[in-house]
Figure 1 (spheres, rainbow over the protein chains, first blue to last red):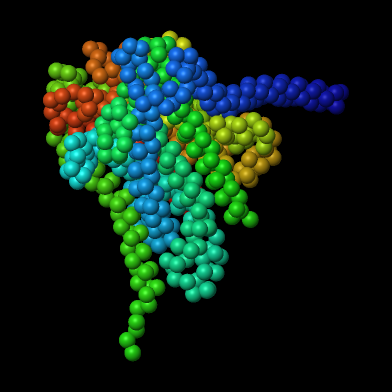
Figure 2 (figure 1 turned 90 degrees about the vertical axis):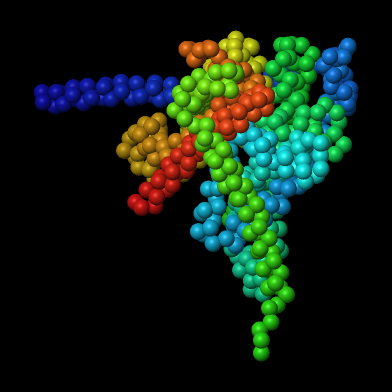
Length: 314
Length: 287
């Protein structure tokens, strides 16, 4: 009798436990569904960007053949018929990126080397937050500073008609890509195993010789990735170049001229472009080019970083 | 005999001074910019400047609608980007096997982080404003900024969750909890400081982002505050862009004032993120 009751109780417990487990399993399945969905969303957004840019941008090539679009030097919206040649924007992007990289890479790598190899911990702990602050500056504030402080300086230093030029924009961009260049290069140099340095000291090398001949070469792939990420940042930056680069539509032959990089061309034109109109399509096509350029730069940087990580992993 | 300084020592000293100069070139302008903005902008800041709507095309009055709009944008962005980011972070750290799907997701996130902000603007314009017909609204702008913030919230959540020691999970699973219960009650609370840090940084980013909302349609002046997510909005960064680059005869102090308010909003969230991270680190080391 007693035994029977126990069996009953056990059954009851088993039943409730089963029910609970089933409920858990249902809730679990539900939440896992959401988790998988969220994981997939990144792919959806990226694909969405690609599809939209292609769908809205490609039709321009029915009107303007690709070679005229890519190599045309005239972007005239009001001429009859309007012409869409993006050479002025492309060359402008090239100039500001070259200026930005030429300034930011030596300074950035030197700063990273100092922080990772030379600076005492206390100094490093003070400098790091300042660089993080710089990374947090909104690009519109940097554009504003370029407008108010840097452009008069550039104007008088280079004796220009206007301080709003590719050079001014490039200097601001250099400043804005410094945080990413510094942090990625510093990580790369810190990842160099200490044995490398000790071996170098054992051979009688000074600290500087060790940095120059051992640390930097060993971290070179990471530094390369850092440079590429900086370049990607400079190519894609919009507000600063929109405010500071000058906005001229001619193909710039020197960085001291006013110019309009691709990002600025989109930002300044999209507001009055009619949906589905030629200008709208042309601007989306420029967006597509920007996307492909930065995608390429990021993919390569990611590959290089992965390889560097594997190299010192043991 | 006098000790001779070897030429190698001299070259080391020269090189190190150059490295210090480079570091100073990075650090000093940051300090100078902050000081200049504070000195020039402080004069414009008053209670009315912060709480009144603009008058005379922004030349007088305050910037309250722009501050409110930026606040709404930050909120809208994080409401979308944080849950998705945490769930995706859980997927990548707890569920994902080393298969093509995981590799594709990781690759997509790396690339989303590098997409120029103006391209996100085009995406938001094409998808949220035109295709979904949200119009030039707070909703469309928030969703656009959320897509942009996604890469950051996913990455920081994934790293925070991966940093939770394996033993915690095993201990929980050993007492018979399910996988999700372990995540919900053990892993996520442990990872919370890291996740929050990422979220606060994403909000700071959303507050300063200009190019996307320029494309998706922020307004320079509106007669009324937005009443619903489908209303148009003003925002601080767009306001700064317009008063600095497009309105002639703008009083200088007003422009600097807008810049100061924007910088304070953005940087205070940045500093908040740093504080959360440091406190969490201290707690971890002290136990």
